[in-house]
Length: 255
Image 1 (tube, rainbow, N blue to C red):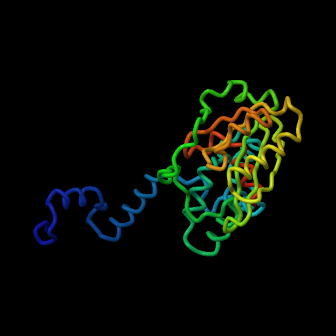
Image 2: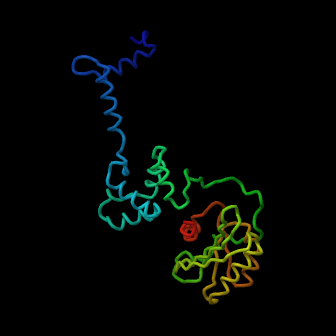
Image 3: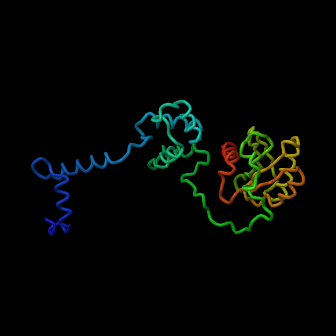
């Protein structure tokens, strides 16, 4: 049989011993046993399209809730039932695992950024050179991480379609207060003017620090420190989670 089928004799022996019926080997019976073993060996997905959890997640998505918000809500509502809880990564995986079609397009459109694929954290090398005299986030005072004392801000720059509009975003870490500064363009001079005006509009004790990414619009960070008197710290390259509050706020603003 092995010579006729062009297979190893041990392969034929294993197939017969594994899939033989009570009396004889039958291809139909062997195929059914193979399918049953494959199904038994796979863990059941938590967000199967036939389960109630998936329907709840879809309704939350259509209500413009992010996967992180959905996961937190389920954990809060069902704290003692892990079977009814899902992580945000599970929700993302279930969305992108949907076959191409109208449902997949609708679910992706419900996400904050509406991307059809997940973006990698590393997106190439910045060839514009580093910002001079940057102060790293790793030397930032530890009380900033505690979110107890107000006055510590996160900042970012949002550009509109075709880079025709620009808005500076400032988010206070403890109160989540949001200040928006409309910019004439995306230059360092406009960023300095816009951020200075917004920061100077609040009391001096509320202007302790500003954590920013390595965007070139903040090249004049020394002037920003001198005018409103706020210490500027820069995140590591391609590390948006170091300014998670501002990143989440940007998604809400765009939405």
